[in-house]
Image (cartoon, rainbow, N blue to C red; front, side, top):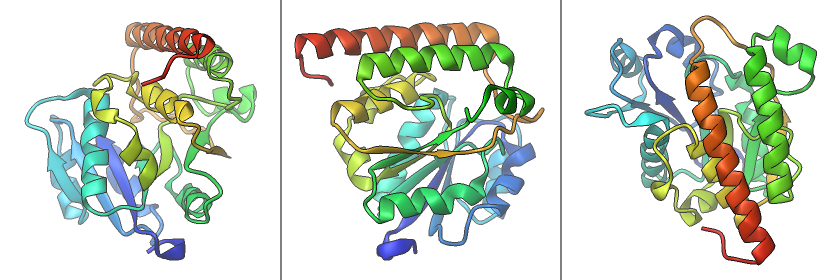
Length: 243
């Protein structure tokens, strides 16, 4: 049980994560009450290994996509009574030991959501293995999203996030994309409702087993995110209600 008797659940949206899953789970702090892994029709032993590790495992009957996987993750976490939900990629790219700080900020009502910020400096980010083109995409899109939203976040594209229960209950994430732009859609939904967002710096850790989308899919993701930001900005300027 987390601080202030909050039930803490970590959700792992997984696809072919068998090579890194055990290391990721081993470093998840003891204050976490439950770990839910949603296997998105992997072709490796992700689901079997997750069961061996004692996780709650849900297996998709077909590949639902990154966003579709998270929809199942969050629905299950809410159904299991989570007060604080941590979304963590199971590819060992993010340091699970930092979860204690994410939880503490929400449990003590300092904020409603916490983002892991990987961009402490250009040198550190690139030396940590982030591909150069992804770094510059990240910086450009984050700048546009900050201008569109009126926020000043260091990074909009982190795969380590924490939410209070009320956040996920009050945004309609089920209508979002099943693709990678899901993360940006959720963040704009949170911004539109004026939830408090905090950030914690996290080290960059790209390894050969780390999940990553290719350049072509990165371009598609970037275009979808840019379109989303522009639409949000236009509605904001016109005073229209954001979904």
